[in-house]
Length: 91
Image 1 (cartoon, rainbow, N blue to C red):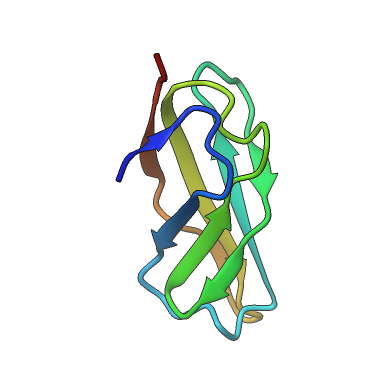
Image 2: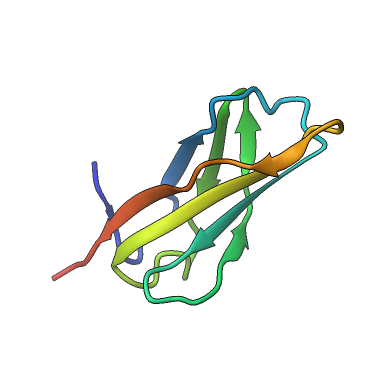
């Protein structure tokens, strides 16, 4: 199933390749198409998967969205690889 502009309640899951269940803090940064800056989205963590559920206004434009997870594991903190998602337009 594809994700479209304006979708609310769509779950976007990012596999970071490392177990983050014991992380002190996890953030998901999202950069919308044509945007110069990123915003932080609310997330939940289940092992290696970090999920975000879209809310009103999150998917306000069609195009390529870029996601990057930041985690603090106490002895290490850092960023994941950047993941992209194509959000499709509507008629």
